[in-house]
Image 1 (cartoon, rainbow, N blue to C red):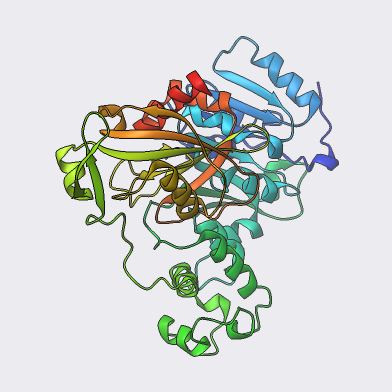
Image 2: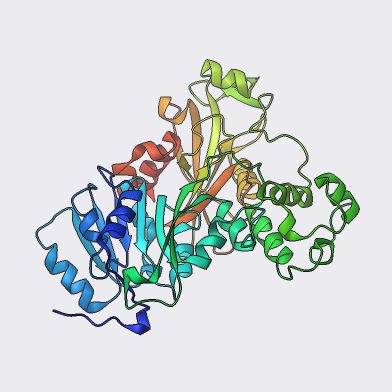
Length: 433
């Protein structure tokens, strides 16, 4: 049965078999655990994807097309159809699936919005291949010397390595668009590839710097610490430098200058002193962090679960600088007790140091030291917070609120994604929370 494309949904259906097959191949779907196709439409890409990954999820907004896809794949347990607006799809359900690949021929009208929704950290997406309007792709992939280089290039490339793969003419679509399309591939930027900095400040400064491209940065950015001359000297740039003349790494360096970061990135100090305790959690001495961890000495820590008004729990992803379980997901805030410090004081301090918030905490459980806790006696505290957080980038890569049932499924299916101490605390919270 013929289907008339809907102009309101920006539908331009891909018809070319060679292009469809080639795009599907770029996401490398064979034996992939989970692949999502956004906007499958009449199934041009879908027929070259189905049967190749372990799971294929199709996100389709059009009622009729979603019904057709459901009927076509009714007996294929590896294919699922989700009917709705892709920009409203809850990405948090995907973490339990492991690394997720995303592919799609995105509508010109909402392609940017779809990209923002799926590719803005935190996200479970591990790779993406998209066809979009050529001009947008040029901006996404632009390098310093390119005319298309601008704020969008920097904001996306901060988190993703973007490759322009192919230009696609209008003739492969029905109806034909008036402009060329292009295909880009996005892969995550490796952890630690950029120096530690405040991501929100980076975004703010980049947007300000490119707000009027012809103006010099000194006339667009806030007053720099020590003055603009000090910043220009730090960057080894002329006073009249413009936004488009700075590379991604220089924009990161500029951000760090505003933060007062001038030294080398470091994790926790190995010379921090902890109380060493016995099997009754009684202090029997002190030792530096390095020795405590190397010898497996019993010590103390606190974990804080921060819930919002919807009952969702905020989880943090640990920094690559962490000496234990880097890049795993952990409690909202967690840390060792300093020598002479009590649990309640440590809980409040960790909220301030890691999340930049102040909130009352309540101890709900004490957990005995074991191998699962890293030989830490742990107090688990609860806190409530609904406002913004300003987390320390040396400590936390990113974070998000999750529904409890999402975390339960995630922990059950992929315990390797979490710091063991969090899992122990989560189990205890389920018993008493």
